[in-house]
Length: 415
Image (cartoon, rainbow, N blue to C red; front, side, top):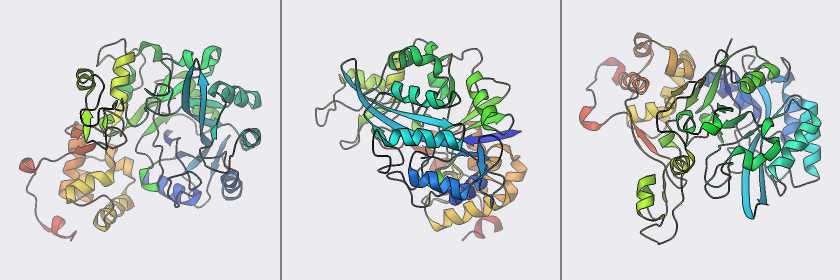
């Protein structure tokens, strides 16, 4: 069966996360998006772990379901932050943890309680190394899977320019054999990661890291396998192109750490411009924040466009609300955009609209400009101002002089 999986999200127990991120709301939004496997997020937070026990019921092996939305399955997931010193440098690494059972999730949470404050944040912070975290999980169950999260972001990732490492082996040492995958993050895509031959052995996964319901599924994974924890984890570990069909990607330029720069100074640099400037902001004279593209260039041993054998394909999409907002010339959060989004996704889920409907089917359910925007996205006809230093990039499908003139009952009926 086709499984669209988003395995990295957060709940209301994480800082800077919407209060609406509860299990029932996540289930309802996952259904509207077309996601049929979603992470619980934050299982290390005792209150959320209790909610998982009380609000979800067991489904297939290792998975759970909210009974009011039976088409959506939950997998036990969490993100953990480790801040520690190694080889004379401060390291800040975020890791995704996938748990095979409620019992194993409880055991890991109990161990973590004695090592830090698991109540303070759904993404808890600890002072021990990420290797110790891996050992701890595997001692409980060899079926735990740990995945370096958003692997390229500058501040909190395995390859981050400010606090990371140059390789998986440098980070995990002899335990590298237990690292089967990395999460590429919003600011990079598989194509960028393919430039590093050292990553050929691992699987590249993509997830939303959603902090609000509407952000679910902005990146995801598409599997063709049985719906169970062992089956999904096996697909990831084996990097099987017969069962791992493709990843759903942001256009990476839209990610908020794609290019270099200083947000407060309004300076954005490509890697080449950073080199020419000596890595210094021309406004304030301080070092610029080095983004993902620059860091990839630094570690890459292959040219742009290289595709390794056995690579899992990727498909770049723009969230439907963003397409509607540009087509209607409204803000993403406006009532007009929300109304049109709900009208369309009452007919089909978002991923079916973005990926599967024919042009004729699209035009039947969409405002003419929205349908045109979706078709342009499918053809890759986009222009993007890259994100930098914590500011998301801006993506455009329409240039004003080229905007089609459409009018008639369908258009007028929206206003």
